[in-house]
Length: 239
Image (cartoon, rainbow, N blue to C red; front, side, top):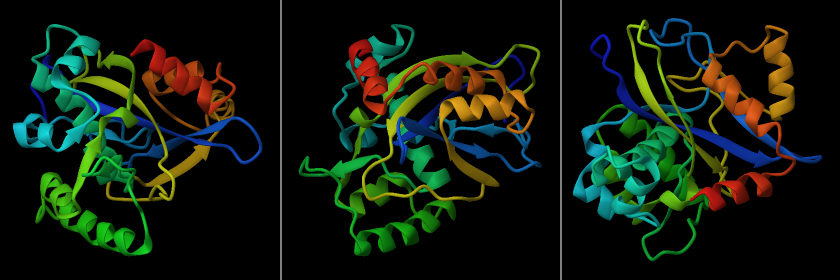
């Protein structure tokens, strides 16, 4: 998957939603046991950036963030198109893995997720996984654009040098869009669950929710927030 010692750029998305009682919940997924990277561990939807994520066509299919703004947030060592590609990769990966689409209407209006569109997107999701349709083609066919404002940059982690499969990963946070439901399982998800950050940390400490440190660290940080609004407000102030 990657050369030893050279990390691949990756993006992962921490989905949040309001809890029924109080506070908010975090969506965590368990990777199938046979996967070469953190198989059997709980994590967040995400994956490596592809060259298609930072093409001019994908940039034009996105709103609410420019390449220059993305570079300013992530650092001058990125080319503007590469920086913006990390946001786009996050949008693509969270749709590929769990079927959540962080998009808006081409007109700029909020995404309308009625039964008809949900059925079409389910078919196109299958086509995307079968590689008979690209993510760009999917967006074009629905007259949608990536809503990059939906993702707030949260943290950065790099796999230790002694690990063969290495990734330089940008963690983003996104609220679950209204009218959408994350898939319980998929080709990269053996199991998934919504938990409060506090509960997830408790299960980890009891050995019931195995995860690598960056996943735990995000949960531990989120446990300090009382509401979803307070998390999003903190991200907005950073940006």
